[in-house]
Length: 225
Length: 238
Image (cartoon, rainbow over all chains, first blue to last red):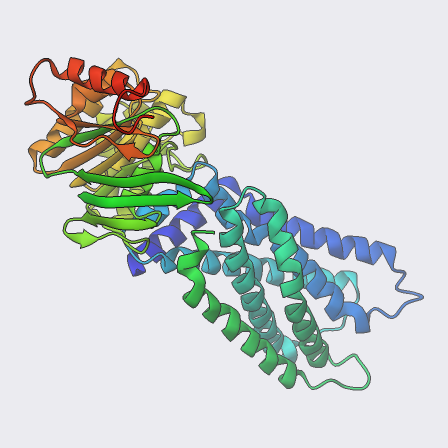
């Protein structure tokens, strides 16, 4: 399984370096959401700090939606997914490689977009909170790409895949949105009354475990949808 | 490879009915049939992409299910399975890595040279013509020295040179003890390459298949059997 996982991972990174389709689109989209929000809301009249975590995660999740389906879309173009399915090794490797690539792209996008959002929305960001904030971003991203990759794999085998994916993904992303936003708000500490981030982070971890574990049970059925 | 009483239902439709077939080592078995007769379904079952609804499929003595993948199986489908943004060399190197071929880049370069794409090996596949892409797909199917080749209409889009090359590679595979299951709707391809030809008609496979050691010319026998099936005079044609 390791060989199949490594080969697909390397190939996907190579494809992205050549085509720059996924990552550039994700970063540009997240920037746009932040920019539009910054323009639409007057920071003189409205205090942005309490809504900053929500804006941040909305931008991340919508940008993530653009990216998470691409991994399987490129396999569908010349039926390369069939090539991967018949290749030796456990088919779970296909899923895990796609999940890893989606995580790498989305997490890197988040780290790049964060300083821009901080500056644009005037959110004070003390250096001491950065490790916990990065961990929250990572946990939220794992939950999102876990469920997103599962649905993208299912959608890849259907004719209406590109329509089906967001329809399936949006409702299942709501828990990630709520948990990650509350945890981020707790870490930033600009909301009153103060929010303890840890219960939210623990719930986020539980969500991650479920959506990383579910494909281990379901992955053989995914390809026959 | 062998199939015993294999049936496949897709939705409400029974696409394959009680198909029994043997593809012994060192031989080319051709399944000949018109469009929609169930040929590609049979190949997908043999590749382990779908599970049979009934019956039993074996490869190298092991029962084939949807979890079955084997590095000894080479599969060429209707599409190339190649990535347009990657070069021919990168595509083949990827597949060689996937199959655990030693020195994957060297193997990929050698195969591309054999199919006449050495000059284009660094070009993205999306710039290849249909024929060039089919040549690259051919190289992909042979990247891991397969012992069982599953070929779905492999001659589509190939020019005379590439057709000769594919014939040669198929012969080389069987000479080395490999087995080939070739699906086609062209009578001439079936008669040229097959050691046995089975006619698939509305999901049923003619039993016994037409063999080279039968009386009369092989092509004529295949043509006669095919015509009989097509015009509904055979046992399962009606």
